[in-house]
Image (cartoon, rainbow, N blue to C red; front, side, top):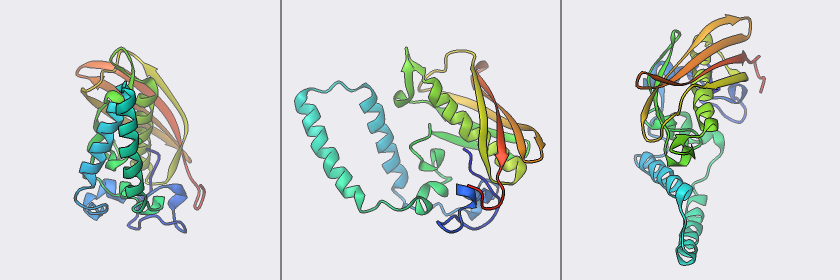
Amino acid sequence: MSEQQAGPALPSAEHHEGGFRPMMELIEEHTADTTRGGPHFGALIEQVRTLMDRARLACPSDDEALEAIAILEKLNEKLEGSVTDEWSSPTWTRLDLPSRGNITLPPFTIVKAGRDGVDARVTFRPFHLGGNAAAHGGQIAIALDELLGMAAAVHSGNVTRTGSLTVDYRSITPLDTELRVHTWAERMEGRKVYVRGTVHAGERLCAEANGLFIVLKPGQQ
């Protein structure tokens, strides 16, 4: 996640904190509006994730494909009326949901976040399959980028963007297994925040990363 800035206000098209949401919710969760999207938003996102899992490995017959297409067309028409702009999306504040309900991210939950680092749990699902029951390396990088960015945000207290990210894959990262992710800032030099992170399956190191995040200037996108 490359989204950060301590402050009580939510972003808008006019005031968007460099394109990212304020980070105070990560530090003081009681300030976040976890009602946005309604009480069934989490269940909706879980159904979408399940659909993504099914589609990743589906090999439908012609009849099944045509039926599914018809259902999905109707569903897309139904959801079209609820589409909003990015600043009003529930995924800014739904800290009660894995990855804040953001389906573009592998589902993770935050155990703790502070200036000394971020601890999280992530599970890669069939949608994230690379091959031979292993998570795709790109999906691992997405998770690490998000959580390294969070570590940079909380450490610096400022909006940042990813400057560089290097991931070393040390062993197979399994699917459908709760994994431990730890990210932390090693040092900060001016606007540069140097971060590191690890992904473990039990005691086994699956991947580790190092990155550089740049603190944005006021109003910089």
